[in-house]
Image (tube, rainbow, N blue to C red):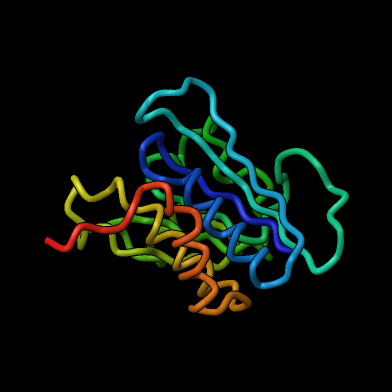
Length: 169
């Protein structure tokens, strides 16, 4: 079973990212669960969402306490205990952090045996951080290695269809 948690702040697209990944798993033939969890529903508040995927029925319920993959859209959440980013992280967990810092810096800072990858936040304009969910979804699919690019594209189209077609300008 794949157990994936997305952490971010309201407005960064983590809820949508988990839905897209869940849909991609489903289209790839997996059984899935995906759900967001958040407190105050406001832009900027810490949220997390999770996806479970397996090739057989999933009997597990509730939040993911021992994740295989943790995706963090906002690195300022990592040291915040209430955000729960590091809850259940162990040596088999892979962390993907959107950060100006390199993975080695995070490895030393967190003193974890987990593999850590970073998305280069410095390349993103701060006003484009609202799109980080899409970047995180693509990176998660690539790290998992079981979702094809075509299926991921179909999942994106399906989940974002209600937004309408992109304008040609």
